[in-house]
Length: 115
Length: 109
Image 1 (cartoon, each protein chain N blue to C red):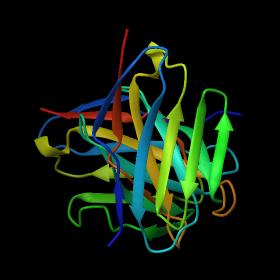
Image 2 (tube, rainbow over the protein chains, first blue to last red):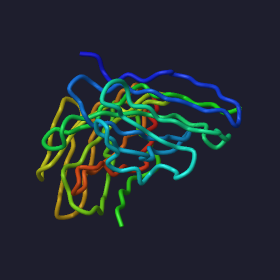
Image 3 (tube, chains in turn yellow, brown):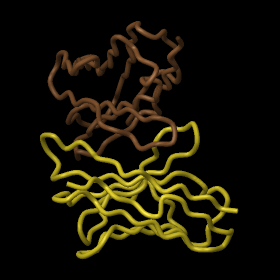
């Protein structure tokens, strides 16, 4: 049973370009979470999605950032017109239906560097 | 507001015992999680407490007191590989995880 998969693992973008980060949840998991982590800092919640629905995007900047989790395929976190401050590790996590044992399982992360 | 507090950094000696505390104030409570995160890696799940008391899992134990809004992670027989950040997270009334900033644990020989 494969774990949470994220790609690419490392992404370099120039200021003003677009970054697309992909996340495939664990088999059987229908809940996906995106987090951002700056060096030496904690996880910052960005967005929580279920298939075809955004449940909570309160942690995501209103501009330039968007996320989706289509019926087929991986979840996508998109950052348009990237700036240097977007450089961070972006982690995706998935979980089964909330309830008993709903721990989140993390992917390896995508390290975004904006030059 | 919602708040998770844990120490920023702790230092301990190889072979010793260390206790990492976590206090929380959240809207609702659906369990408390501890995760381990090595530098440059993803967090990995360590433990889950939803009832008061101590849960033991090998060298690691986690304790919860819901009335006090308090938990701790106890690490015994410390090994160098235990050097990592330890993240406390609480499930709120919507089963969303509220994350602490993490405690960086430094193990010295």
